[in-house]
Length: 213
Image 1 (cartoon, rainbow, N blue to C red):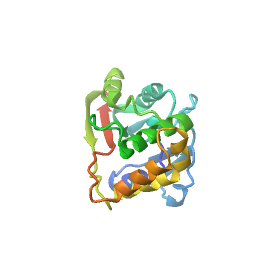
Image 2: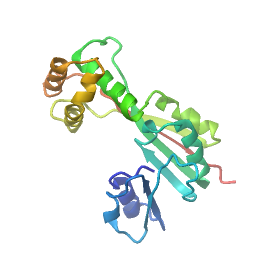
Image 3: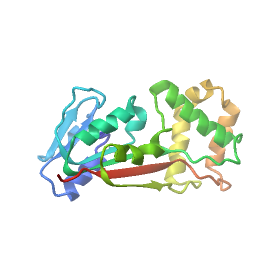
């Protein structure tokens, strides 16, 4: 779900040994080129209540629910598409702010980013830590979760990712009123500095299994 560029779909085709992999997204242009006999590409909106793509042994949704309205309802629908014994895997971003840092340029820029995403496209990560509870409420078993925080050091892929993201979002970040151009420049310089010492946003992965009965 939310196939994006098709990295997970391609990995499943190569490694999972299954008869079919379904790649679903509102925009499937990036996965159409895969052209694999065991790949079914579905162009659809996950929030469409009439959507019925089938039932599955595994449903994977990474960096999807955080951008959708009615995400709790969507978890219920995804769980309902599991075959007996099927597994649901959800992954979204979580923020781990430093409680002792509420006013640095870095902290204000990161907070501005989440506010800008929330007001422009509806991104909301506040419920992500509750995903294991959601899965348990859906009657799934063997529910567990893990949190991964990749190193945020100068010159790393993650530092480059945030640099490019903030550069691209500069007008939206300034529009929140949390940062101005000078603060943004300071944050970008900090991401490239050997002084960088932050625990950046991580990803929470939560999973559970439908009963085989």
